[in-house]
Length: 391
Image (cartoon, rainbow, N blue to C red; front, side, top):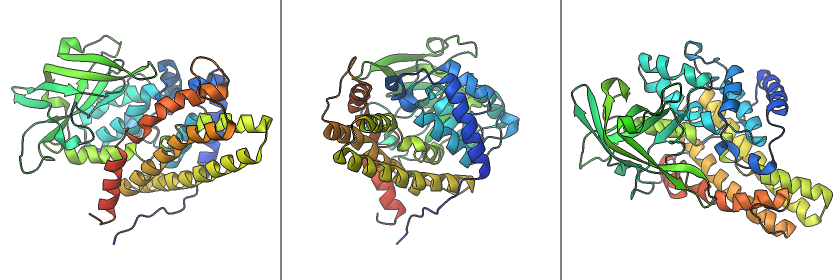
């Protein structure tokens, strides 16, 4: 039977130096954000904040220098993300490009694509979205039906994507389309493409290019998600990412980046911080026990996640271990609002109340999605079972 492996990893001295730099930056540029705003974690978006990070070289920091990166280690990137998430910094604008779209292009894109699409990301000037999920497909990514039909000079795209975070504000989308049908192998015939949604100056290109975005409002009344419709949207041959019909293996590599970072156990961290503040004012034995257990779980998940960063830094495939971190991390994040309510005997509120109550109110509604994004619990556990040779 195969096993998973979380080797202990020590962060290098450069990571400690960077941590202090990031904390000083956050004192200057993030200190005025309210606890409720910080609770948005990595979904909070502020293009100006992203540009300030770009000026510091903190976007795409592990990428090659010729594409605007700094060629720093995965450990340094990990420390940067950890500090940003704990502080509730609004990193959402550049998040997708930094975490997965940039690495995808570095691994599979053409040199022309890298030169065009990566440097603006590192400057905090270009934001991405991902076109994967489709209506009526659930978590079955292999059921993608949106078609890219080959025509002279490129492809015509017809179909729909759903739950596309940030499609209304992004400059660029990397999407998965079906370029041929193979009844015996649904993983065959999928291809990835780069679609331009905006000019660098912000001019909207979507409807001009046959791409139509409809907002999907969450139960919080927020607009992060979208349904995207393609109507004879033309994509030039030069926008194909990697090999035609090889999109499935590319997407699996991309999702490995999405499932292993500190965002997979720190999305509810602001509520834990509010719990600690409340306990310091009114200490109780029940509160100390609850906080102690949560912090112990947090430390364990962190050690596992840092170990995955070590695998990435060594060029290893962390798909199995990353899926485990993501699954356990979502369980942890979703437990915190319930534990907070039981421990302090207060109800979650919206629009008023203490910081603890308002942050709890936000997360009670938002945390239900944590076991969906990046792969549902069922999908992840299937990947884990396959990785362990159990299926």
